Length: 529
Ligand SMILES: [Fe+2]
Ligand SMILES: [Fe+2]
Image (tube, rainbow, N blue to C red; front, side):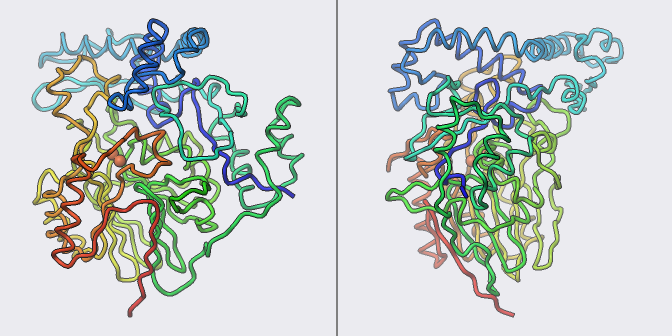
């Protein structure tokens, strides 16, 4: 009998690019194909040497440069042609969205919008409502389910399987995948149920022959595919917590597992493969057999990591996530995204709603900032009230308005343990949202509207207002198994490190237990009646 090795990475790709939420929703996918993928690839073909030099420069980390040593010009030329052919409808959809937006900006000056419906580009007709806000600023409301119905196509989704021996992986958002001889590409939709059985075989033994048949692995690929399996039983680590208290495990970044003997809740899953080096970590083997609630704080790619989510889908009972600002291009529905990658039992929540279970509840709370002042509502922080203890998962909340936490306190009372991201100097707007912009933003505005979290003063104010007993900095992207998605390279002089050090020192001086989390940590909180 065989098991899938714990070192096998499973990267979801679409059109050969590492998949993230904005590549699922058709409107945002359309804009990213045109404004990111094609742009980067065309620039590489024109000047591969500049790309090769830029990826060597630490200051350019995470920039729009293809990391293929400047040597794959023909392959990228072919991929440009494939993209133009395979994504024809989406490329036209991007043009239609831009055309409609420009028409509205020029024509909608406060008068009736009715006459403009006849001028909506054909491919968007019946899928958009034209609206004003109360200041007569026009905008488009997309009926997203119609867009999925017409433009969503899974035929270019695939899972790249390969063995990894260390944490280092190249940054994936600027470089498409060119076939590698040490990888196998399963050409199946992300929602395909066969993936659940594959990932189940990390812990449940299988007949190798039947897995080979299930995925139609061809004869030349068989040897490599077989090498992804082992006869050695996987390690387990006290997986299903059965004591009376509450066990909390930090898996790295914003991934926190809270367990009691009757419920397990996993936040923002990003889980390391089993790599043996000097950084100890939890891995897939440290999770319970079933996760009652997988909880997503917001739709940034380091918090909705498809690569981990797909590997956990078979053991997830419910997935909890924030509702979006219905119809806005920059805020696609997480519900539709998660549904289309195969999740069921979706719990779509607004602020100050509750999910109740035997030992307590999850209360949803407002999450301000970190989204470049765009009207993006798919973001929540959470308070888990469990066995009389309160845990607040604030993700990348930027404390833009201190009184917010006075209002929150009225709903939560004192918080026992706070987890807060402090990436206080985040990337500019264009890094994530650039391809969605209709008109370019000036550099000054772009630099002023960032994906920034709280600095030390803002973070301290949260601790004071919520009367926290423990306050941990998390979600800093520092674990090396995040480097392929985060592109961060902090030094002791980086503002994010200086500010989080200051915050930790201030907490400790006030008798509040605090640290900047890294790698792994476990807390067991005894139950008291
Ligand atoms: Fe974020
Ligand atoms: Fe984040």
